[in-house]
Image (cartoon, rainbow, N blue to C red; front, side):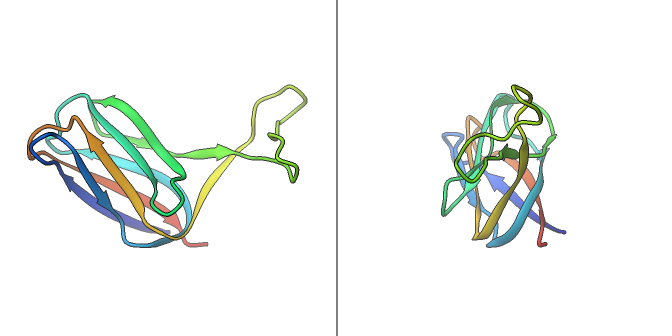
Length: 122
């Protein structure tokens, strides 16, 4: 496993975009450590090259951890279920030589927060 730590500082309008170095592997979790971002900050975290969604949340007020997963599908594109009509199967999200893109909105003027992206390099 490898930890990629990114500290993000916002512009005067409360926005920011930051990136990890290139990563390869499955994303296990993303940890947000609140610095002094304003309460109500919004995150959109994706893979840069593909736009695959990792975490999108509005109005975050405190440090938190998310373990992003995506729906799993069969070879014909049908959603996989645990049982007929049951709960959807989800799996970790893989990135291949891609950067994690962190976009912040409503973070406040010149405020900071830190993200730890935990990736299993398989």
